[in-house]
Image (cartoon, rainbow, N blue to C red; front, side):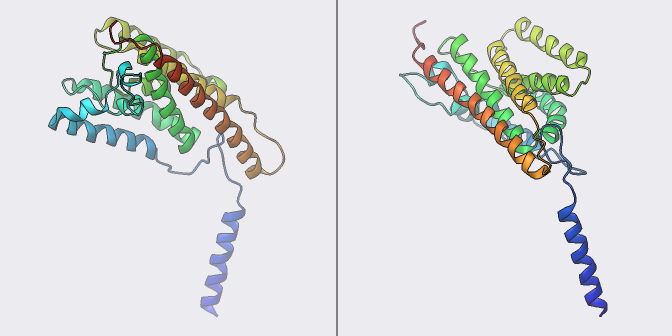
Length: 256
């Protein structure tokens, strides 16, 4: 009988947990106590591992960086528009350290608020948006690499998300302004990638934050509906970036 009572209590506890309302952020992410920013740490770890491999062999850098010529009628390697965000200048460790610190600092706040899938989409689209800007605004043979496009996407997204929650945005605006100035003052920095990432990240966050929360009385159903519309919005951004890439390919001229 004792075992049966224990089993009954355990079953009752499990049933209660299943029926307990799920706490969600304003943007639809499930909030769990002690939740770790797994995606943020994974991206940082991947960049660090690739940086070590870059130090071992120059071929790693050459295989993953992006230049506009690599999305043209001469060379078609579109995956580089994303892989270039994972590699950094082997001769400048500060390039890696700054970007990883920025991802850690901002990402650990944004990831729990958005949830992992939305956060992955934000990072990926920001990196792609940075490369699209490079495609249009950088000479065809100029290689670009680094997570700065994704970092600026996080900056832009954080500003929009803070505005949507009524938080003070003076700090993030100052941070963005300082980094924009640095982009133009220090030689060798791709302001084009920063610009594209910033705009894309802000656009993604705007679509996420402006998606209305349904009020049907069923929280799970409402969350699914909100997530569906957010997903469609982010998919629309992806389609736009792909279309801009297809158009930009026709404009690449390796002789200019």
